[in-house]
Length: 127
Image (cartoon, rainbow, N blue to C red; front, side, top):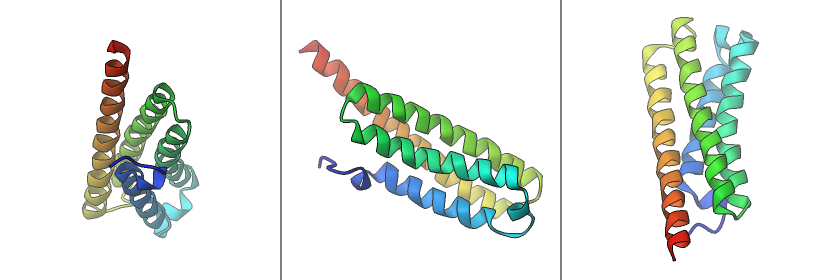
């Protein structure tokens, strides 16, 4: 099934869920008062969603691939920030693991979509 809208993409749907969880987690206790880390985590989560949707809307495989590369990098940034939040005792191990698992799943989905686009680009150039 071909996605007709970015909202149809499983990767975007999972990124949306991750973003909501990041917002929920960063709105509690001391975390909510650490504006720098809170805002950076929110921005990196939002960046994942935004780059998937923006790349999709450009309708060019090369550009979509590039935007997915940025989304993948934002996944890495978010995962790094999760370690800071854990080390600062802003989140417990269970919340950390839940967020980390979802961030890793999103990263895998982004990578798989990038690979698919790369393969399609290569197949088209061979024909």
